[in-house]
Image 1 (cartoon, rainbow, N blue to C red):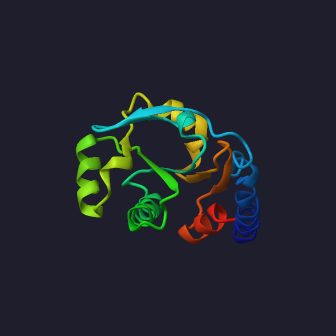
Image 2 (cartoon, rainbow, N blue to C red):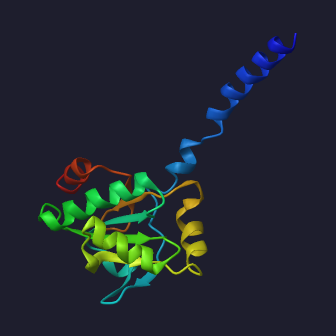
Length: 163
């Protein structure tokens, strides 16, 4: 009897758990204006609204999140290869330590000019604006300031920008 009850409960949990993920939440920014924010690094400061008129690839990542780190490296390589010349690349790192962030920059051979490390007191505002509570992501923003893709591949970026 206990085995049957355990099996039934397990089946119910397995059926309900995937439905807790809501694609509408994950894609909620697509079609919307990208929320504005300002950020600075050692050599530059930007405000997202001032980048209107250009495509922007905005990448939120952390060295502790393997998927976002791998994607960020691919975006960085795309940006420095020259294939993304018509795109502004903004990479926002959420590592708790500036020292860890700087080491990852060296290890991954990341271009520093478009990398920004967010101090811990600023993370909650960006988390809220961009709904990052469920994980890091990347967004492609069109020249009007609208989000047109979430977590795009470099091939998808080229297709959308050249469309």
